[in-house]
Image 1 (spheres, rainbow, N blue to C red):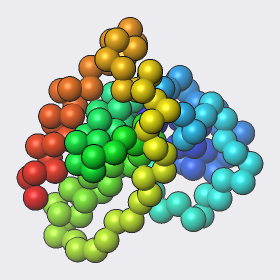
Image 2 (cartoon, rainbow, N blue to C red; image 1 turned 45 degrees about the horizontal axis):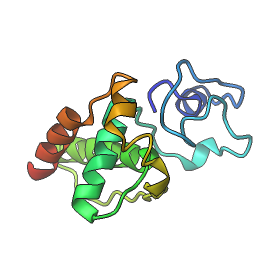
Image 3 (cartoon, rainbow, N blue to C red; image 1 turned 90 degrees about the vertical axis):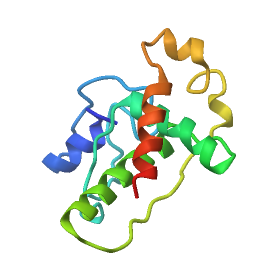
Length: 137
């Protein structure tokens, strides 16, 4: 998530880094870094806004028929950004990620329109934008 401790720690190589803002994305959105975080096994870090992560989680349900959580949505957005960059540079290759969290436990949070609205998030515009980007090739 944008402003996350993991993104800041990776850039600075500082395991003491803390998040610069709160996030709705559990796990990868923790305010502090896990002591076992290995900087050198991560090629790049892409920061993704919460609204985009949640929109992507909703889109994953459309695409795969199963709910996934916010960190899986974050992964989808990051992979799409990486793929678009590769296409622009004329590169070919593979991008590998994991859908790391099933979404059933987020029924009353990330998949609840009222809960999201109370936090100023509407996943529909982002979902439409992501869907269009995926259809663009």
